[in-house]
Amino acid sequence: MSEHADGLLAKPWVRRALVFVFVLVVLAPAFGWAAGAVGYAEPLENAAEATGAAEHATTLNAGLLPDYGVPGVHPHLGTFVAGLVGTALTLGVTLGLGRLLDG
View 1 (cartoon, rainbow, N blue to C red):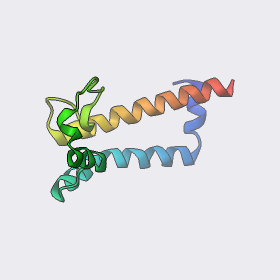
View 2: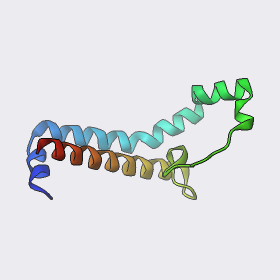
View 3: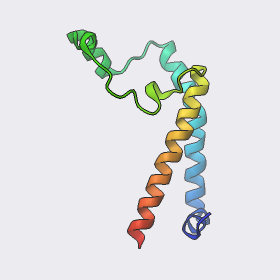
View 4: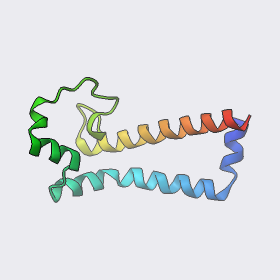
């Protein structure tokens, strides 16, 4: 690990924040299950269906992790993996940018 990252991890608030984010990632499949149990749908998708726009939609790029999951994997496990990957990518990019800006 780099000196910069070691210095960050020495700060108690950074460690607490990372634990909190990891707990949210672990809970993500439960949030996904609960959304399905109550019939939640994204408001933008609801608007697209109500206006008929969903019928004419074309996917140009499905994305790295479409629908917050991993294709071919159980939805709950896919949500967990997508959460880990997304969190790691975001953390990596922000630490990298912070290091560049720090000089």
